[in-house]
Length: 155
Image (cartoon, rainbow, N blue to C red; front, side):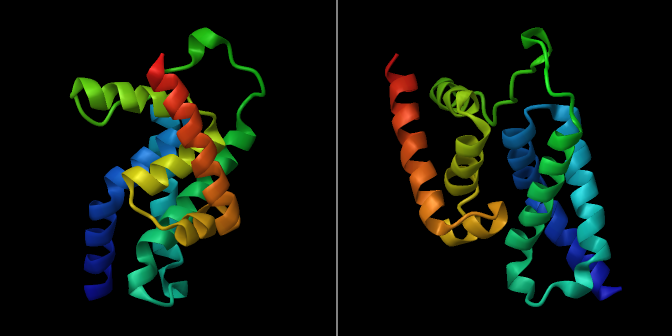
C-alpha cells in the first residue's frame, strides 16, 4: 500500500509537467490528456521495473513521450488548418503569453526540447534519454530553437 501512495503522490506532483510536455508534442488537449492517462497506467503497471525512485520523473516522461509519438502515428496524415487548436498557455501574464505562443509556433522537435529544458528543468542528458536522442542533438535543437524564438519575438 505504501508504494501505491508514493506512486500517486509522484503522479500528482508531475501531472502539470506531463500535460505541458504532451501538449508540446501533440498540440491537442484531448490527445494530451489521453497520452498522460495512458502513460500513468503504463508507469503503474511497470513500476516494478523502476530501478531508482529518484529517476521516476525522467522515467515517467519517457513513457509519456513514447505514448505521444504512438498517438501521432495513429493520426491521419493531413489536418486542415481550421482543425488545429491553439496550445493552452500556462499563465495570463502578457509577456509570458507572447513567449508561450512563440514556443508553440516552433516545430514539434524543437518545441519538445524547449519545454523539457526551460519549463520542466530537465538536463540535456535527461532530455536525450526522454526523447531518445543524443545530448549533442539536444544542444543543437536548443540552439536552433533559441534562434527561432529570437526571430519570432523580434517581430
